[in-house]
Amino acid sequence: MSRIRGLELLYSLAKDQIKSKQDCVVAALHCLLINEGLQCVGTGEVFSDEDAKNTTELLPSNWNDNQEVYTLRYVSKDSKSRYLIKVVKAGNIMHINLVLNEDKTAAVSANIEKLVSDEFNNYSTAYKDLESLKDSFQKEIVEKLLKKPTPAASTSKTSDNRSPLRVGPTSSFPPPISPLGVPDYGHDNPYSGPVFPQVGGRDLDPLGREPGGMLMDPSSFGIPRPHMPPIGGPRGLPRGAVPPGARFDPFGPPMRGPNRFEPSPDHFRPPDFDDFM
Image (cartoon, rainbow, N blue to C red; front, side, top):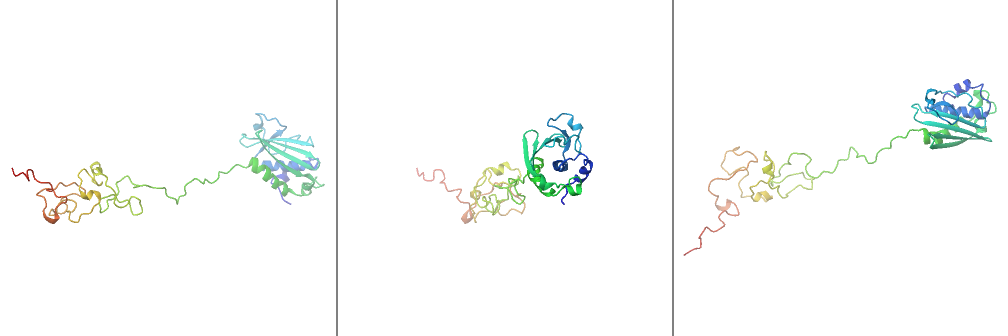
């Protein structure tokens, strides 16, 4: 026979009070409520501020004076929730109603003849089918009124394996410079490759890491010129004479021949070049 925790002890304590089969059903319901953490505070429908001081796990006195309608009051352990159970006998059926805080209800029915035998004066022979009562109570009462809701798994939470979208560099430092003199964000970045220079960026960067200062030359636009002198100054200076990234104003006469800058510094005619007067 299936058991309800605490029912055998309660039956032994209330044995002299049990008068009928429906009393056995109410005693089993009382144990199911106690097992859910509730405390009984008396009979009747009216709650009072003194109920929290008179809690018990036993059946209250006069609990079965009315054999047709049973009304018992319960409170949660923190006394914040109030439960009123009313059991009404209608022939062989007992209609069980539980009210939470006067605004939420749950109900279930039980067949007395299927639950309790004619030999109800002894616990070992009183109950025939406690399993069905437990199942109905769990489904219709506990899950609707007594079971604390568990937080559902959030579907909006971003998975740990999912990386957020990123545009541009993720660091506060300027990105590395590609051989073309432009920021290099990597091959998988939509901004990788030749782009327009950050004009004036070098003037705002004291460490000289940004491309594109105020002094512009053809290399500022990512146009490779094989005949241009190496970055850092003209040929002939010792290694390290010009710090990396430093601006260098060329000195000396302009280069001539195939290695000179284009456009030529002398591409304009001198003053009075064609004045023969």
